[in-house]
Length: 309
Image 1 (tube, rainbow, N blue to C red):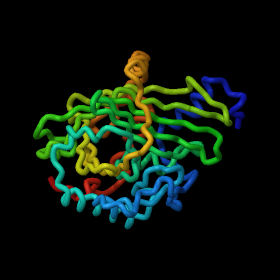
Image 2: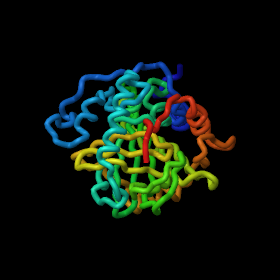
Image 3: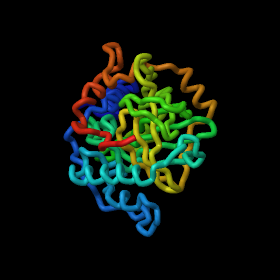
Image 4: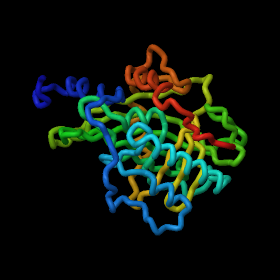
């Protein structure tokens, strides 16, 4: 195999970013729960009703979110049952306009098909690490920032979804057909997806990245999230397909791109991809065809966790 040091910039993009962007699970490194790092542990003495839920979620290698593919199935099902129970107990309303949504959130658990694929393993020894979602409600900005680690420490990479968030009108239906009657729904518009190589053999890298421009299918439901529980330290969210996301608030804020940085990114363009129907068009970049091609059989269960409206 040709050494990474002798490769040209173009070859590095092909060998590293392209396979990274494919998001195809492999068996290069079976991921399993690890002992919880006390620095990132949820306070077991908290009175937050979500405390019991958080205690169920194992810590994963590199701080990645737990998924149904990376933890025992019975544990995942217990987590999802606790989510449903907490949603019913809290019966939160009008969270879409709550200013406390702003901040930096760490993804702890999800049964989202796309992230389940990503967390299970990546080509060339890469693995998903800590996944953050900083939100600024006042500006209507959000980002999904995922760290990509190499099992041998040869390189570090990242993915970043840059988008806009806004309050959805009352009584809208999401892609799963769920009607929002509680005022908890926000629309999320994905503007750019960026795959980057940040470090290679201990050296900081710049400019090694691929940009994808997602376009939602006009016949599909507008992408949305429902905030079903919100406290000072915990947030439960449902994706447009009713998949589950469990977040905890981070004490240290992670910065979003500035207005100028966003505009520069948007002006670059990038490979286009139409999304929204769960399948990719033939002209879409290979990473989207591979990812969405596995979407229907990734989870293989009711990802809503028997959600009730």
